[in-house]
Length: 372
Image (tube, rainbow, N blue to C red):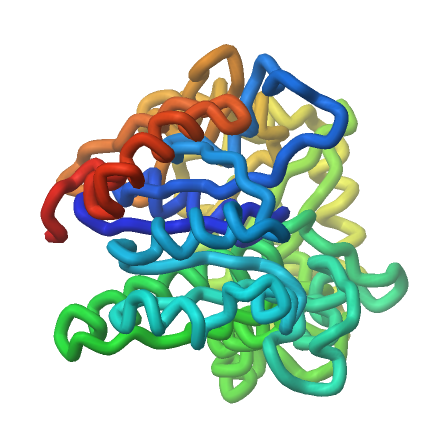
């Protein structure tokens, strides 16, 4: 779908590489500029799975040669991705002004936690720090235990990589219409705050009160995670009255008056305990046999390896075994067809190929000779 889109990635860690991989999954031509590995004269035998579908070139950006390689690559690129702290690319001589002088149509994508401006812009941080400051972590837990972060998902990927991706594609569309590139400041704190908009919209419906431990997402009995007899867990999300009624029927408590008033918040702690006892009486597999594929709004809590074997995910090809590794398949799919993950390059695998291409002109480096 993104055939003809050309991306130069200045490799870092976390959301920037994921964003570049996601674009490569969707058909973009991505060249990943990686650092030399100190003390290693040969590349490692296995590449980084986050580089699937990309081409890998090694360059030292602190040298004139490394800087010039990047500038030559961007001459005919649509976008650049970098994830350095604010100011680092400028000190390397590869800031937006320099790059736009080479290619005025370039979309310059910047991936950070705190953003390019603000009093915390230069501070180090990780996913849980960014989403704690943005408010996205607050409701993730009950009233007693501290909130628990979903590793890298909410911040690095949801609030970071995916917002950078849509920013880059928006910038590319604008550049093709106007001939003018732009800078994309994709900050995890911004994106993860924006992701709260749906939750904030539920305040008018009473789903969220403003206090952790007093909302359907963190204290109700009908939207919760429960432990089963075998130590595994399941989730229920029976918010709507018809789904709640079906849940009570399946659990055999439809006639129990204690469960009749679904929205009586004062009863939620007691009802949660009753549900916990019920779900602890059977194994996860037994609950799956009873509740899966119904309108109860049910799901087993699976590890990625278990998820890869679940019949629904198998039927859709959600996970794939490729190059000896378990990988999540590219998403989304178009016209019902799932894309296959690209090959995983070894570190610097395409350095010679790209150098030879640049010797013939920047345009010849790219897989598509004409922009789409």
